[in-house]
Image 1 (cartoon, rainbow, N blue to C red):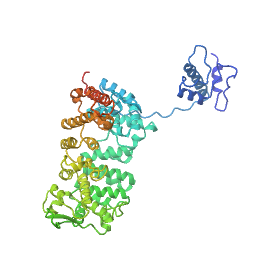
Image 2: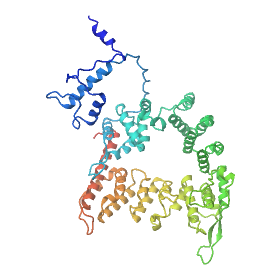
Image 3: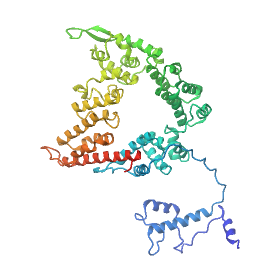
Image 4: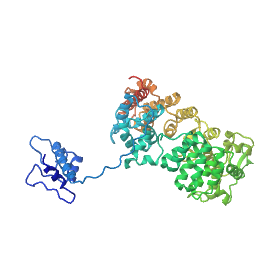
Length: 565
């Protein structure tokens, strides 16, 4: 056997230039590699490839041939090197695999690019909006993601932060393993997502090792897991390394404590009031104020109760007593240590700012004793002297949300049919008077009933954010109220685009069993006098899409349950 070929190959080194093809030979002349890549990215149909195309040959085939030849020539000059270390095998995921139909559905949802950026949506369901619900339902069944779809799943989570918790939960430990091999998925290592094969209570050494050596996401997940089964053990784990943690990490760990807060956490949180980080101090104070029996809550109550008292009503008022307000005159060092911010934001008075923070941190159950044994509803109904009513009620709203107090939330919400509730100044978005925040304190059924009665009186214009905090699928009364309001809007002759947000929520949140009842709304109706031109057809299209989406959701849930199609 001749050794000439071997000698020729070994003679090529990075310092030995590769002979260039003869320029006069059109079959071997090659364009620069960058030009080949550019042509491939744009497509041979859009740009003529910088290669010679033989008779009868397609430009795309000629481009691939040139790329293949160029690749071989590029690799021929590489010096052999030792193979890199192979990655450790992926961890096992004991969860059951998806049923075949559900696996195919996930592949379709991940491949869908969504509706176009302009024009009408038509009657087809928006698959991109169904993906979050599919992921949530798969998580409830306890499935694991198919290995072949993990890259697409992580790509979806990278581009849509709203998908990350459910997507990473489905990806599980193998998704975390894969993220370590690709910088595009490094976000997985920084956040909390999915079961990470955390050690249990029967493996204390493994718990300690993971806490000392794990990634930040693993440590946060571990602390949350330990706290759920044993709050005291989780606190001891955190306390052991607290002094050496970074400020931003300490803040995240404190948030984890809030999920399973207990009175035994008070000494640790009291120490955190002296933390060198202002954000950590503020969070510790908020957690302590959520413990009605804490010493901080008692200190706040002593300060705020001294600022509010009953006084005789002036003049001919029909009310015998009013609430008189005497806000604090200074913000001393003790108040600041307990989480009171001394400097108010622009446009706020100092004394009003301090009063609001004190009332917010005071246990709500202390007020009846201070105000003559009145109930929460009776206290809220009392007139407030001067211009202090908004400040006082806003602080009570923040306290009701922080302390998750349903009784006070009901009193502050009032009756859903009250006409003042629809006034913009009554509940601006993001304010302490945001009705949506108060609604989150109520049980799911009560919340849905309150919103349904609100919609029946005030319509849909002011109810969008309220609908977003109601449990999915919507209860029958709430779903009926939304559909009836949409039907009324159609009869009024307006375009459905004014209600596109509510319609989108309905597609995701209505009970799929309602699809049959809504069929009657898909017909094109006669347009009333003065209606927007073509509104009847547009509403028919919108309801067709709604019904089609509900039926597709029903099919998805059946596939996840393993039911035959």
